[in-house]
Image (cartoon, rainbow, N blue to C red):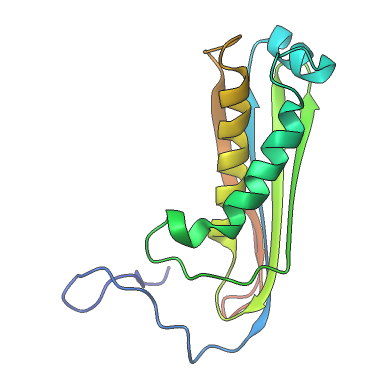
Length: 157
């Protein structure tokens, strides 16, 4: 395992200098889920939450969040993203599965953008359905694939 890159020799937080890195295609995929009561999932599927298209709004929120990750997480680089997809799929009887794919060509990876997209999409599902199910749980947010850059490919087991 490599050392921490966001600290200088004195232990102060710093933004990593990526100017000497080669520009390569970078891809990251993250996943997560929102666990809920089966009736809540049914209300989402049937459009009966009283808030409209929950999954459509959460998809847009995730895409928007990926584009603004550098404003949310200290020391993240602002990136020109080439592609962001966020898919939310009902997983009966009691979950919504979320997957985000982020792609760019640049000097640093897009793992944080993919993880942020999943996190905000999940929070949006929670926000839109909390009136009917405050016991929802957001879980299993994780990086499942990363490609590009010096460290190459990572795929979660």
